[in-house]
Image 1 (cartoon, rainbow, N blue to C red):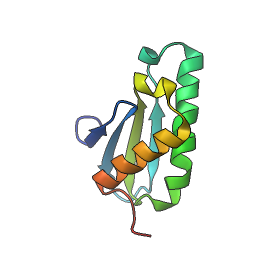
Image 2: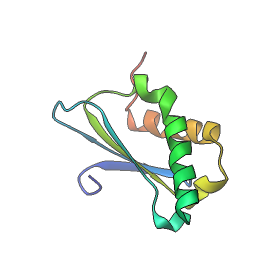
Image 3: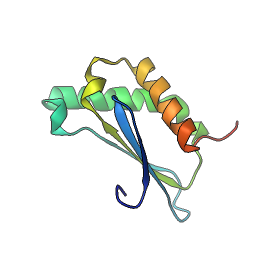
Image 4: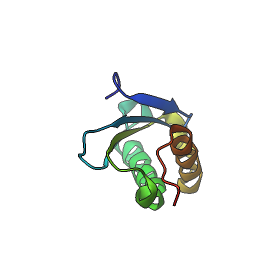
Length: 98
């Protein structure tokens, strides 16, 4: 995925995407140990899921997405991360017009 797909980055997260062959929309969320202990990693994943939830109905189908948290996300609120994720998905052309 990271080698064949495309990516777009922000200090909060990195978005990787790759079209798939009709397998629907698949999304993975990752938080590495560079974020800290389990509490910090789990918080980062919760914030990413909360930021992604309103966008789920607007993402083009038949893509694989991986969202990796970066250390900058530790101070961010889910609304800030939502705006960043929205901008990265628009830039990537992953959102539908509706």
